Length: 468
Figure 1 (cartoon, one colour):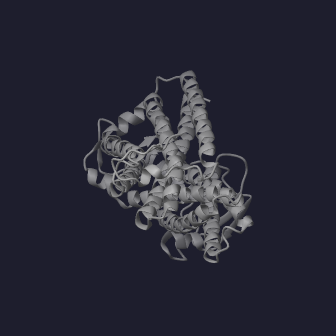
Figure 2 (figure 1 turned 90 degrees about the vertical axis):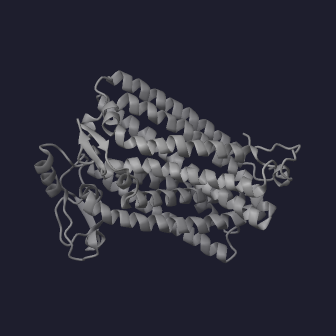
Figure 3 (figure 1 turned 180 degrees about the vertical axis):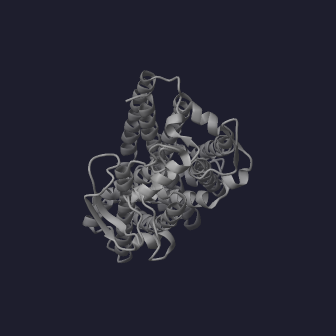
């Protein structure tokens, strides 16, 4: 294993973990904002207590997201110097917007929300949280702008071997960015809903604070079902676009080696244990389905890996332009399968809630508790497919991954930094998990709400800020 291999493993693991935390933090800030809005409109103190209760998890996820995100800048500078130099001019605008705009707004208004209980007017205090939610969405959008440019570069010119920004409008505003952002936001809201549902199920199984957790579980189910359906619908449209704009990615995701017309959608395939086996031992398909996904035509032609590889060699020269087929195939199915299971769980839960049987159905509550892992499986599968499916390119059609790393960083340097990052991440997640269990495991009965409902400017004897 050389320094490039280690750098790729380091980037994959650390970025995947950070991406997971970002999904949790965006989902929870939106959900907590919903809870506080319910309290603001109804005056029902139950929603206030739940706001402060789940607000602890939200704050913790933001803290972990900041810590894990900071390390991303170090590894880009250390391991991917040629990539940074190549895309620096293009990425400058969106990353400046994220760092100097969105992150600054998040930090300021999150602080106002934390320490504003009992000090700020209720409406202004609620507005602070919605501003944080908006800034979090903007932050995700700017990062996805950069990532989408790596998938679909535009608005640039090559000058002295580097990409130079010529028009920022197509970089910031295009169909792929819009769909990707909507898909990620819907997935994040689904993740937040599943976490809230799992916490509620944990306490309902113990018959603890039923009057609080039964309604919040019902709300999580309704929001989660809507978010899951949006994520699935947008993902379907993304798949249709990818078949046209990144056909190799989708061919690998379907393990489609031969061009087919009509093409079937693979349900299950198995081949030899190699990166690219070249043929399949088992291949169960839904006839015509992939052709319909391509352009809604049952006779549509879908190009296979072999033809796409020959086309890439003719365009870019000799080389292997096929991503790891097995990894792409099962990543795609883990994402779709987990999402489908979540839709089923949310739909069943909504039906039980409508029938008034949610809090008494212990079997479903156990299922809801176990389902907390599904959004993370879906996120991991989607991220691996998106990033791994464009390999061997780090910037599609322009910069190969094996020419984007730092040439003067040796294997020992990357290995030591990798070990250090993993140790740091391990300690961070261990501390976060332990803190989360301590703060959310006791129920809501100990939450203080006095300071939150007093007149602005009047100091309560109880703690006014959420603390750990």
